Structures are given as structure tokens and as C-alpha cells.
Length: 253
View 1 (tube, rainbow, N blue to C red):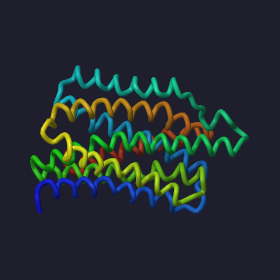
View 2: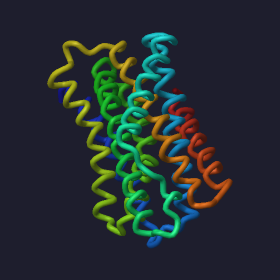
View 3: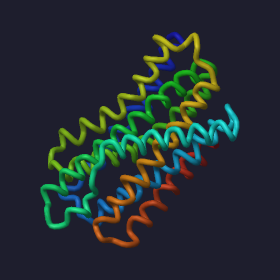
């Protein structure tokens, strides 16, 4: 088996671990508001944990503190611009209108799926490139990403399932967010391999960290608090951060 094929397989396994999280989000027959408030807070903790415990340190190591933070601001600013040009409301702004609430919840779930897909694409590039350089390093990164992708799959499937009642739609969006991981590897293998280096990946990861933080504070935290539970989203956020820190500690990163 060639090194390229091994790298592609590792990336595929890591990306499709979102399916595990997706299935976890579909287990409850009826998701309560309390459960969902916690999950959204948890997801914000996961995303911010990924950004500041993994993506930014990797970027700083490759391109330095100043460039990393500038590119973080670029990623954050790009999402702010999109949000400004395409305004949307939060669930709490339409209290008493369940149909509209479900529509906002569906939009949030899709937005999270897109954000995760954007984040997974360069991660697929990074896993693929690392596995080519050193297969043991590629395995370590793939395991870390797989652990991360389980709560990410839950974060996508749970809101869409609650909004639509459709397990198929919830699973599909979660699956598609995971597809971005091997897609990044395939794109790299087909087009970028001759030009790819650690500095380019560092630049991409710093910008993606900005994207993830914006999604967390602009989408996830407001929606999680809109259910009326004052402390539950905070507990979920802390739990998400702990999970991310523990996953990195377990693999010795």
C-alpha cells in the first residue's frame, strides 16, 4: 500500500468519526430544551477548545505569533462580514412561535455543519500531509481529529433533528460535514502536493480558528441561552473545553 493511500485512509477514518457523534444525537426520542441548551453550550466549548488549544498553537509554531493572530482576525472578520451581509435572528427573538424557532434552529444546525466542514477541510490537508511525512505522526493527528469529530457530529445532528424531526436529514448534514475531511486530503493529493508546506497549513489553521470562534460566540452561545437556562450553557461550555483538553492530553499533544 502506497504512502498516499495510507494517508487518504487515515484522513477518511478521522473525518467519518462525525458519524458516531451524529448517531449519539439521534438516540433520544425527544430532545428536551434543557438537553439542547447544554449541547449547544458544550459545542461552543468544543469549538473554542479546538481553536485555542490546537489550531492556534499549531499556527504559532509554524508561522509565528504575529502572523497567526493577524490571520485569526482575518478569519473572524470574514465571518462577521458574512453575518452582517446576511443577517439572521436567534431563537429567543421569536418566543411563542415554534415554527419560526425550528427554522432558526435548522439554520443554526446548518451553519454549524458548514463551519465544521470549513474547519475539517484544512484539517484533512494537515492529516494527509503529516501522514506522508511521518505515518506515526499522521496516526496521532488522525486519532486527535477523530476524537474531536465525535462531539462535532453530535453538534450538527442534534439541532437539525430537533428542528425537523427527521433522522435522515440530521444524519445527512452531519455526514456531509465529515466528508470535508477526506475531501481536503483528496484536493491536496490532486492539486497542492507539490506546493504544500507547513507554513501554508499554519496560515490556513489560524484563519479557521477565527471562523470557529466567531461561530461559537455569534451563533452557539446566544442560541443556547435563548432557552432560558442561565447556568446550563455555561456548564456545557466548560464540559466541552474539558473534553477537548482531555483528548489532547490523552494523545500526548
